[in-house]
Length: 438
Image (cartoon, rainbow, N blue to C red; front, side, top):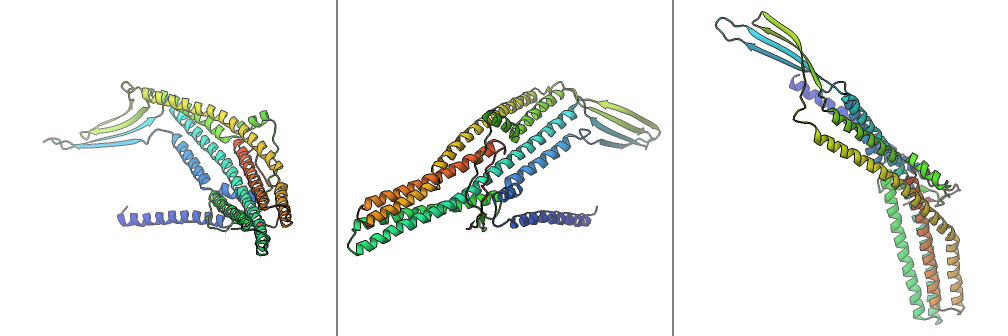
């Protein structure tokens, strides 16, 4: 093909590729732009499973392994080889030309094609298993991030309430000081309480930003994008089956364990394939020769490499070690899954108990204690240290309760990942008109 035409074809190919890539990017951007507002928990999980970059990369790895399996299943090891020779006799009485044509094709022997195809298919299935488990992990991480955003909003709300209460006490003491019925020491105590409440509010707002950024990263959206979440933090209690049943079903659902089993199968087939390399492939050929313009010769031939010097000993040793590694990793993963499930169950039950004990009623009780202490202070029955103690109590209860909720979220989503998605946290259905905005 002339060079100008090749340039035109190349430009058209590049343009088509750019249009195709651009259409895919635009489609992905359109999907992200269509993110529902306000966003529910399940919508966030679906968004992450579709657009998360880690999931997309794992999907690409599955396509890569699929292509390798297609290549491994080729009918012959290589393309046929055509060889053409010609020569001219340079003799006074002979000016004829000799021509030789040979075509050769290498063929599989010893079942090597079936072994390498089986190994490639096992690698493909392993990649699919890894993709499946990654989706489970991303779903669990998205639930955790979503619920922690709701928790961060709750933390900001309680921190604002704490600041309001401490400011009310400070305002009252200021009026009492102006009336000569309080001391500067008492005002300083209330100022310390206000400062601590302001610091708590600043930290709560910082944590809210961090949780939003973590959720945006999982959703693969612009971190500066406005995001509104639906619902308040009301995690439903998980219904856990018996320990033996939970462990058995978790082992069956974990896609990474199935992927590890496929990796063992692939390594075993590779080991067998290396052993078959001692059976050399055959190359069959046909040839035609014409000499001195009158003599013609046609025939067939066969060639085979002799495995005398290279006996594939090192390759067999390496393949055997890879098989052993894959087996060890599968067995270690089985124990790891059991440990993860048992640990997550223990953590969840402990966190659930803490949340029930430290329910929101304790925050209300701590706020009520601060209010009653302020009334007693106004009546002259208590001094400034009592107010400080009441504020400390409210602050500690708030922190303990929010920590317990955070542990419950972490344990519940860890249980989802450990069980391969068998159990996952959900929100209790309840009407809510409050969103979560930046």
